[in-house]
Amino acid sequence: MKLLLIFFTLSCIKDTSAQIKHVDIQLSGCSDSDKEFVSEHDGEELFHSDFKKQVMVNQLPDFADPIDFPGGYDHSVSEQEICKHNLDVAKGAYKNLPEALDVPQNSIYSKSNVELGAQNTLICHSARFFPPPVNIRWTRNGVDVTESSTLSQFYPNEDNTYNQFSHLPFTPQEGDVYTCTVEHKALQTPDTKTWEVDVELPSVGPAVFCGVGLAVGLLGVATGTFFLVKGNQCN
Image (cartoon, rainbow, N blue to C red; front, side, top):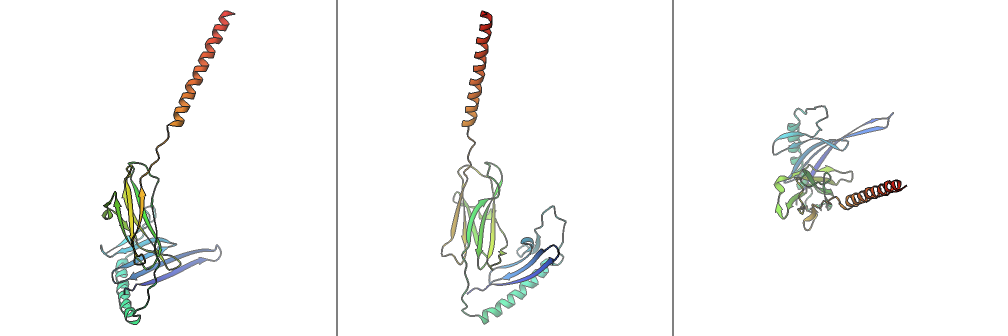
């Protein structure tokens, strides 16, 4: 049986006069095969540790004042060592403990309005699952394109479930079919969501009718003017 340990460091700052509350969360988690360290402010990620590249990844937007986290990655490594130790203790203490499982609720959608030939991003969102993480695979017209995708950190919900996102950059072409397949231990079979490039072309009907109507109107004006001039000449 696999176990998952997750530790939260929660701080809350509240201005009693304005009733403004800010919440900071630091999450450190580990299992037999996965590990994570992430810091959030009011539900938005500040930074996380990339344990493969062995660096701290700053997630603040470009327009924000630059903030450094000196020693942040080393701190996350030490947190993992503590987590792994406690995980081994938990394995011995809780043998055959039934594991809580929550099935992920999955969806797929584009980041921006779709325009043929314009760069965009597909998002596969897995919501309210436990335990983390999920595994997500992508295909385009039946061909695996997972290597071009990225997988986010897993983010906590208030009910102790988690969310996770996978992003796939793509250029929409008419008729393309994309799928994202989510794998999770709570799923008996992988859950596949399908998304098709289906861009509705602008209708030419209204333009044609407007053009014909304008031409008929101008013809009517010209005809009326002709008969008016002839009538004046006869008089």
